Image 1 (tube, rainbow, N blue to C red):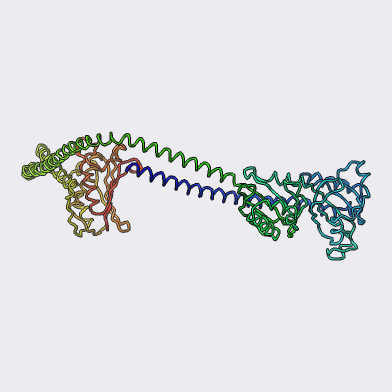
Image 2 (cartoon, rainbow, N blue to C red; image 1 turned 45 degrees about the horizontal axis):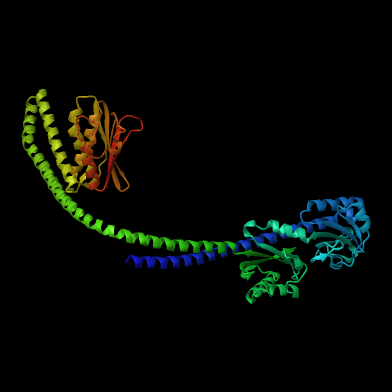
Length: 569
């Protein structure tokens, strides 16, 4: 059986590990794909914002009064300040006149300026396009005169005075020249690489809207078209599925679509995420990220190691289990004998406890009934003597103690019934006001001669309950208040509260000891020298048997306490 279990556990562990490895790899790939898409979106927005800042600078320069008035000296500061403000992306700002000749290049030394001043750049696309369309122009990668690869952004300078008469529309006659910003592809690449998260470990590339590579870590392909022969020759080293993934992704990105594809490159799985770059509500180009699945592969390898370790652990546990098996069998036999012996002893002890409990209940019942028999004639005789000799203290002592014995006997019997779940409730309709008045009348004789006073505030209201038991509850509460109130007033109230009738006994006595409050309604809980601690326990059981509840609290003014109980109306 153990060998079968081990084999099953090994198979289950291997299957579970393989499944877990696949699941974790999927999750890791999904996370890589999601991060690549988020990063591509972020880079696209960051690049668009940077280039938009440069475009805004060009627009501001073109409309500056110094440029409009051909004030060369004032305009130089504007160009220089613009380069300083955007030096993290722009290489320089240049001013070309209407003929395409250099007027000024920002932050250029005098020697270089003397060399390039008046240099004819009218053949450059960034001049011709802005001159012909009177709109912003974004070039592809251009090999500049200083042999540095750059992309250029140009904006036409239009005579603002002539423009005023055209309602803001471009006017060929208003053309005064072009302002140009140069952006090195090297600087553009550093900006993009700096923005990408190091956790992604990815590569970033940038295309213009015709598919020309503006930036790539593979510098030989800068300025080449991704669909051209050279770049396609590079892709041909990959499998057909990967080539299709890259080409379809490039096409989708250049058509303004966002997305990602998982493919293979250099024998490693990568996520190819792409995002269009939009400037002035027109597509400038497309940005792409290649994110390797390094974390997914590492996670899968770790799980394979864990699977092998788990299998070895199971085999080791099986060997240990076989070694211990013999001891278990021998111990089990001796344990079974010991358990059988102890079970027999416990069964016998349980029978003895049940017999003793039954004898105890019978003794309590017999003793209580036997106590009732002699006490009753003593009470009757003492009451007759009290009428004949009302001032005789000995007769009063006999009568008081005989009544205490009777109450104690009844409490013991009630507690026994409660413990055995045999307390009977005989419900009938009666007037609660009459019952309270009768109870107060019984106790009124005890306080008529001292400084205590009992009063009640109750209207006529009928309830369906066991009148004898409710009298017992009220007597217990009133007796309790009298016991702890040597001087003052005891007030009984009854009121309807929704579907409940609430009866409260409020006194001005010593209050409830805080130590006894948590166990106030439990059996034998009392702080009185003369009490048994059964009255409140019995009262709680009676009230709960009626479907109500009982509670107590010290009065807010610090004088006395209030005991209350509720009954269904």
